[in-house]
Amino acid sequence: GGDSGGDSGGDSGGDNGDSRGESPAPLLRRDADPRIYNDGVTFSETLRAMQAAQQEVLQRRKRHAFMVAPRPGASAVPLADLVLAFASAELERLKSRDGAPGFAKFADARLVTGRPLEAALGINRYLGVGDKSIWLGMGRGLDAIRDEFAASGTEDDLVCLEYVLEGTAGCHPREWQHSGGKQMDAFYEGREEDGRRGRPLSYFVEHPQAREAALLPEHVVALRLYTTAAFKSINDPLRNRSGAHPFPVTVAFINDGIKRLRAVGAGAADASERRDFWRGLRNVALPDGFHQTGGTEYAPLSTSSDLEVALHYSDAAQERLLFKLTTASFLERGASLQFLSAFPGEVEYLYPPLTFLDPTGKVETITTTCGVKFSVIEVQPRI
Image (cartoon, rainbow, N blue to C red; front, side, top):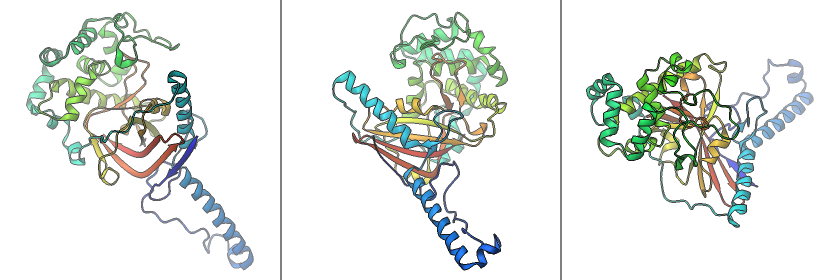
């Protein structure tokens, strides 16, 4: 249980529009209904009733800045209700596990984002090796990816590369700590297998989604690698920006592959409909000025269409940051990697490096009775 407050700088209702700077329309107009307007008593009573109804709606919207559907086809409910229900269940799990709840305390860490200009200039500028070197490397294809990992990969990176290139899906016995002890390309919790087990790289290269997006084998390898434990070696240099990236060609194929995979969404029934995606972070604050100017995510940006998945990524923390990414069409959405992911149970939508997050002005703060704070901010992603 707990309480929630919202401050959206305007109309903070449950729609996904931009609420900045628009004045409300008059409740009654002279040309709307002359009988009401010209009858003083009827007009006054009608106006009072409409004003009261408007205030009730505005107060409800102020209390609940975001209204969301918990699942496709369900009615929208206050986001605060869903978040507080999650927090309550989490608290019970912590109590049963440890005997007393405990949350990781907030450290003065800030999300690192770049300027809009950096999004416009593109990822090659920030890989530290120059456009021509990257283009030449992409021309060498898989040999360039192999060389990058041979020169700079960790032991785990090399294991993952060998598995992706030469292994068969689901046939590596190692259980990976970063995934909660799961094996690569294994299906858990009753999830139906998709036919990949025992199949080589060519299975993913020839997959209908890969073909629809015109992915090359290099795209598939780079994206498959990103879904393994190698993601850390890819992400960290992008966020730290300390010198040349050790895997520039791999990053270039990831970037291009994500953008191409948007073609798969072009044929979906919801291609031109609004959809929301979520990203949860623990014990991290927004950089100064983010609410006014937004920011650019340097590394690939993982999101989920499932709110609960995003909440789990922020769990066991005192301060939690929740991004609500609102999109109007498939062109603003990340790519679903489930068909080629080494961990197919992790249903994510991946945005390319240097995605710009543009705040809409809508925010909400949700605080539980245990003092856990969820800061929710709505943004529009610009790819």
